[in-house]
Amino acid sequence: MADLTSLRNIGPALAATLEAVGITTAEELRTLGADAAYEKVLRGGTRPHFISYYVLHMAVQGRPWNDCRGDEKTALRKRFDILKSAAAKSDESELERILDRIGVIARKNEK
Image (cartoon, rainbow, N blue to C red):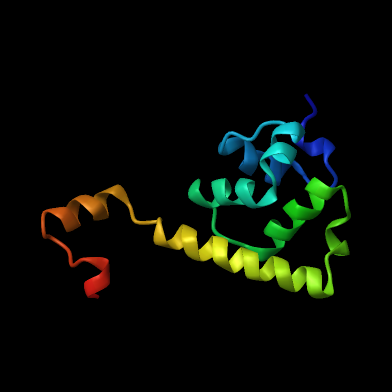
């Protein structure tokens, strides 16, 4: 099994982020795909950043990070925004859920 850093564009910092959410090899990343991997990264608590998202796509394809341009970059931006929005909706903390359930804080849809 190849190390994550064996993939083009994946340095120690991005590898550590991926490993923190259970993606530990290049093969796992390729099998999972960039979108699903980035979704795991967001759910793991990493703040969304478009560049890291498309760098991940380029890494899975074996392309240089700066090869993403034009229509391809625009399409990736749309997918990134969808993933970011979905992660934000599921980002409610357990404490917020408990406080909401017992009526201590207002429900999110009442704000």
